[in-house]
Length: 196
Image 1 (spheres, rainbow, N blue to C red):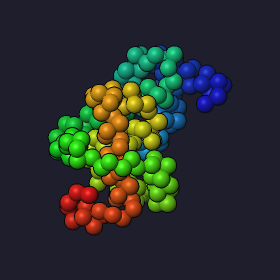
Image 2: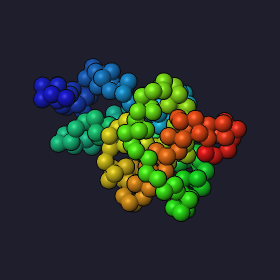
Image 3: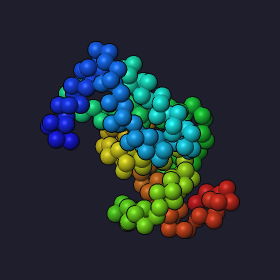
Image 4: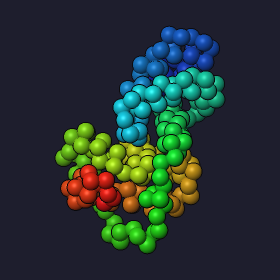
């Protein structure tokens, strides 16, 4: 975002903080589509993503006074969104035995992130979304935070509530699982309700 656009956003935030509904509406119109796309990748269903998007913007409006204008607004917004989605997934008590399995069970090969990106580009967004939905919640969330929100390992660790070193393990496993699903290996097993 160029400096002029940043100045406009900061002005809208200042106006929204002082209760200007039009400024808040402009912020919502500008950022809601991207936050919905983020939620759609993080949450299991479209309805969940729609609900999460609305809840996130309610939270953001309530906490707008806590926003530190020295940070980019979009980074703060994605952090709120990621924390909200992760809290929702945790509250649903999604089984975590696959997500926190023994490190010895992890494949030794290191999937090339570039190869995964190429595979993802060859698939439709619906195919990628279905593949992401088959991943355990923590793995899906880690991939979405890293590759769709461009968060650092430290930011992912803070959002997921894990040690930074564990983020690498989760991402390695998640990339491997996603590559297996997108590459067709293990897809039949997953469709049958098993694990890849």
